[in-house]
Image (cartoon, rainbow, N blue to C red; front, side):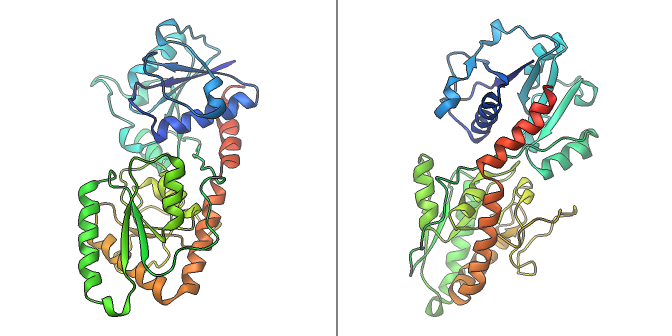
Length: 338
């Protein structure tokens, strides 16, 4: 039994590719025969650590059999063809619900194909069930807790708000402008706020910024199971903003009745931690701005409650560490391959 991962021809390493790498690495360490199959052998992602040792097979040399498992990320339906032709176990690993039907030829229906699905989060599994009628096991990503960890203490004085400019840039700027306007109205009794961009940094750089920040402005949507808010939580930084749908796998309201707070229409499963975020509806600029203003006020006026939210965030991050991810990968995909 062999397990093959199709690698899309992406120009640089992405979060999705990184997760494919950690899954493949976890399986290889458990003795499974694992291979990467890049569509473009001259454009292979720069995996880190031991993942570099996993063998690559060019797509034009691939010879699958009916005993193999062929795993393709969502959004690349044409890449299913080699597995379907060989009658291999074909699996779509859906890391972002928004791209599940991307690239499908007009005459092709995913329901009609002999394909299994794996979801990256509970909301993505819900999306797959509602649209395709399939029950998808969940294989969540993991974060490196040796890198993303809380400092002994956060800087005092200025409230530091980290954000990623590339995540819906227009909304980021609108939220920042709105919050600064709100803040001007009560500068006398509030600390100063400072926005810190996270851009063009490696993981160590991202971790350093998050460790120095009190709040993470989460503006990503759509999302499957977003890593940046999890990494922020691991660094003792509270997410405020959008869940992107997939973020509701682990994000829960710190103050459910706060102005701007959003409750999804589906039932959220109970989790082992309490409120860890301030969540507005996706693309709700005013809601996110109101919640960000409330978070700054809370950090300034009720440090005991703030520390409780941080504790919940830390518990969340621990549940998504790499050990949990590796165990999850072996249980889900390893089970398909036996």
